[in-house]
Every structure is written in structure tokens, then in C-alpha cells.
Amino acid sequence: MPKQARLSGIKSFRCYTIEEAAEVSGVSSRTVRNWASDGLRVMDGTRPALIRGDDLRDHIKSQRSKRAVKTRIDTFYCVCCRRERRAAEDMADCDVIGGRAKLTALCEACGTVVSKPVVEARIPEIARTLDLKITRH
Ligand SMILES: [Zn+2]
Image 1: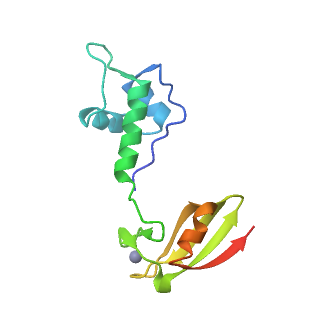
Image 2 (image 1 turned 90 degrees about the horizontal axis):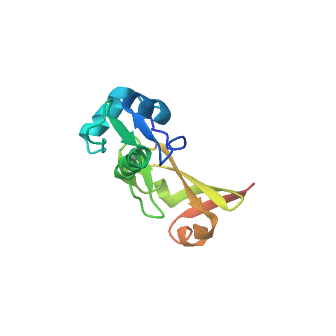
Image 3 (image 1 turned 45 degrees about the horizontal axis):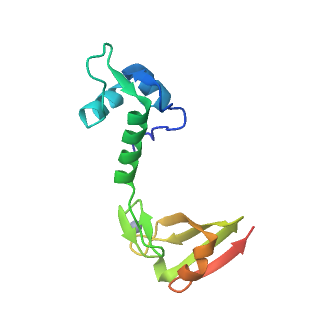
């Protein structure tokens, strides 16, 4: 799995050189050069090449959303099968901590532990299709 780029330190109104962009987002300068050839906007005619902070942020965000796999509310993404799976025997553990909940189950196909965060308000909806064992912390 590639290292996750950081968004937190990138200032929208700053311009970064390739090296600075790499440093602030926690990736190698080679990765930033790959991004530049993969659609990340680099300012015209500047030397060294400069990247606007907001362009850098937008690029990282769009890469993340491309990678994210959407699952239905009662299914999981299995890292082993690399696809959406149902919970084995439609059973899941549900740990609730202050308004947030974490569902943990076993992949129906390979038995790998799968989990995902959900908001507590959606538990009744999930409980219609999954047999939940709810633990409140
Ligand atoms: Zn699996």
C-alpha cells in the first residue's frame, strides 16, 4: 500500500517547489513529479517549477477519492479479497464510543477480519440486515 500523503500542513495560498511539496505532504519528490505528469498543475514559466498549495491539496484529495471503495452500509471492504464483501453469517460486532461506532466482522468469503467506522445514528438501519452484538464504551 502506498504511503498516505498528508494534507494537514499544506497551505492553500502558498507556492511550493517540488521538493517543498514533497516535504510538506510526506512523500518523495519523485512522487510529486509523478503527480505533475498525472494532472497536478504546475505554474507556467516558473523556475524552479512551483505548485500552488490549493492545487496540491486538490490533487491529493482526488487521488484519495479514486482509491476509496464505496461499500453499502451493511457490507465491508475486504483487503484480502480486494472487493466488497458481506459479513460471514451476517454477524458483526459493533463497538460504540461517543456517537461513533466501529463494525467488525469476518469476510464471508475468506474469513479475514473486516471493519469500518459508522455513525451511531445508522446502527438501527444496519441492524435490519446484520445481527449486531453492540458494546457501549
Ligand atoms: Zn475476503
